[in-house]
Length: 225
Image (cartoon, rainbow, N blue to C red; front, side, top):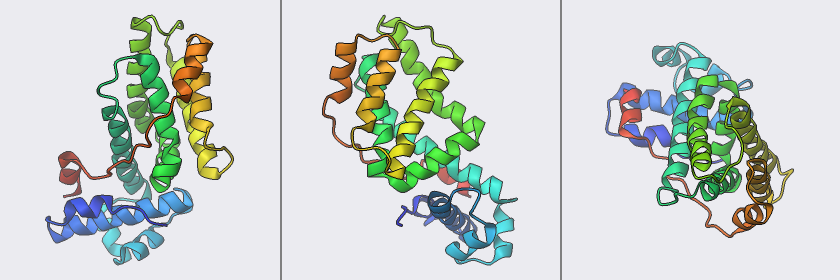
């Protein structure tokens, strides 16, 4: 399994302590992607990072603290880049379809980060709120454009998000085929009140696979120090 050195790449010009912290975060990300949060241990994280066990506690209180740090960074990268890739798209129907399909396509383009993101979103409520904030904005945009004929509330928001996460999980597990993203996007659009013919047209229209560049922002590099 290969996972990008997201944190160490951003800390190479920093001090030794910052580089060590970044190595621990990269090691944790690899293990979370492979084994999940529950199975990964501090001992295994330090082994993969090639540092002493005691060094871990210089930088993090416990496994939960490093899990939150890693998960927020990965989620912010993924969600912000998905949103940035739609900067020139104003149509809410198109935006919801693109976001869902590209989110599910993480199972192909970035499967290791997709696993980290899937587990993190369900385990950390604060992270889930940040991720769904982008979705809420698109759903409210659709109502304003008279494209969605449904009242947007927390139940609708959570349902749409859960549908996307379910499709991503199915793709990561190999249970769903390449059509999972399009099928889910079509179901979501129809649930939101989009005409069935248009929902199908938008959801199944060919789109390029989005390749995410998982590089830390200046803000995240500052947090490593």
